[in-house]
Picture 1 (cartoon, rainbow, N blue to C red):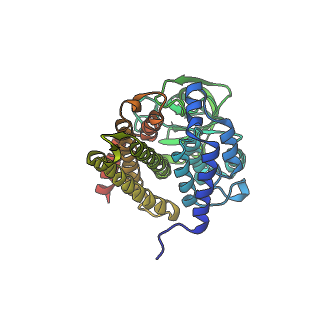
Picture 2: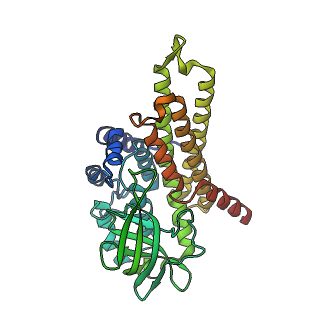
Picture 3: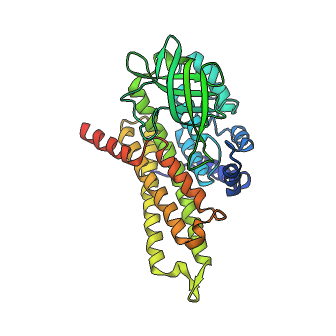
Length: 367
């Protein structure tokens, strides 16, 4: 039995890595961070032209017609490059939700525009910083309009479509809100990773429609977050691998007492710990990708494992990256802080690792 990726899948990943190496060096992430911009518009356009935004979308909607395994590999390369584009909220959440639960009219209207990059999707579940659940939703859907506040919401300055968790009167659901229209007030929020900006959306009777006509319900919302957790885990693994590679290269080129500091046992052990954490995260992410691509019921627990291990690995890799760079690791000129910012941002984008650990325990106890 072959558990490896196919030659076509490997070629897709290799092509993505080469493209991002040329068009999205770390200087591109730094440029967005330092300019206070929202994202790299040219890179976003390029990602659309390469077919990445619709990798798992059927060709009838303008997508590439691949599967979630291919999308997972693309996510890993986006994470490895620290690409300053709104890939996660638009592709993992908004596009996936419409593809899976949208009505025919919603798919026809939005998927081609999301796939082409014409419209950037965003996702709003939280209403208070630090609370990501739907147990007490205050945002409500009434009479074809949404009322409430969503924060933090990614890419509010450029997003054209919001997938919002709302109270429908029959329980939690999901609504599609076209941004830029009436009843929508957007504000920027300060965030640790300004290359992935966040904001607050105040919805005052903003016109909207429920996803699929009924909002899809709380069960689908949980399922959507599980799917996104697996894809984001690949992004985190890619970033962690790149952070370790840069750290290793730096320590091999830094000398003390006539020898590379990478040869000292203390640093060897620490890098071995990072490597082990990354391998555990990668294995968990691959398991999640299998469950996602096959529709297996184990996705619920596999997503939790992938989310927790990937968040921990990226956090460890970037923290140690700063430490092992020594004093310069804390400076603006070195790239360590770019990785640390991204690790922290992704680590809370779908709820913290602590929340996902609690989900895992609850789901295992429920089996």
